[in-house]
Image (tube, rainbow, N blue to C red; front, side):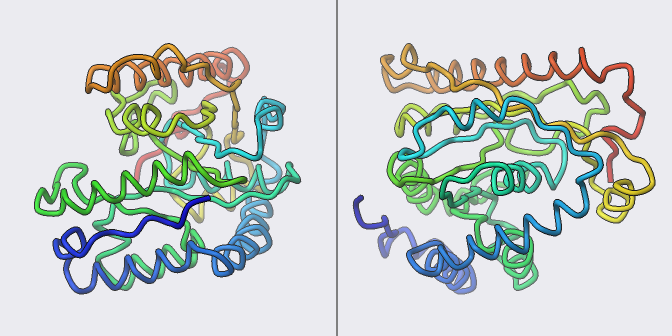
Length: 287
C-alpha cells in the first residue's frame, strides 16, 4: 500500500488556521497505530453503547452479502440518509456480527466537524475520529474558495476506497438527510458518488436503513418502551463494470449514482413488503 496522500501547501492554504489544525489532527488519528486504537474504541465502546440502546429493535437482513466480498479490498457501503445515526447502527452491526478486521471512514461536510471545537469533540465522542476526510464545497452554503482542498479530499477518499484491507467507507449519495416523511422516498444522488466509484472502483454494497429517528433520547428509550423496528438491509455487491468502462464524464457519474440509488430503492421495496403496514407517522420524525 502506498503512503497516505497528504495535501499540498497550496491546498492547505485555502483553509483557516483552525481548519488546518482540525484536519491535521484528524488525519493523524486516521493513520497507523492511532487508527487501530480508535477502531478498538469504536468496536468496544461505540458499538457497545449503540447495541445496548437498540438491541430490542434491531432487524438485520442480507449480512451474508457483506461476508461474501473480498475482505482484502476496501468496501464502499452506500446507504440512504434519514437520520444522524444511520451509519452508526450500520457500523455497529458490522462490528458485532462479523469477525474480519475492519476500519471505518465516513467522509463528512467540513463546516461543522472541522470548524469549531464542538465539532471536533463530536467527531471524537461519536465517531472516534472516523468522520474523515472532510469536504467543504457542499450543501446550501458551499465555500468555493476551498475547492482546492476538496480536490485533495477526493484523492484521499479514492485512495482509501482503492487500497487497504478492511477499509469500510460509509457514503450517503443523497448528500444530506432526506426529511420527507415517506421512509421510501429518496433525494437525487449527487455526482460525487459516481466520481468516486469511477476513479477507485471499490466493492460497492447498497444499504437501506429505516426506523431511526433524530431524537437521541427518544430513540434510546424506545428500545425498552416500544419504538419502531430499526431495519438494515444489505444488498449484494454491485456489478458496475459497465460504468467503469465508460469515459470519465459527469454524465457517467450521474448514471452511476442513479443506478446505485435504484438498488437502494429495491432494498427499500423489500422492507416495505415486510414492514409497510407497521409504519407510524414517527418513522421518519424530523427535528
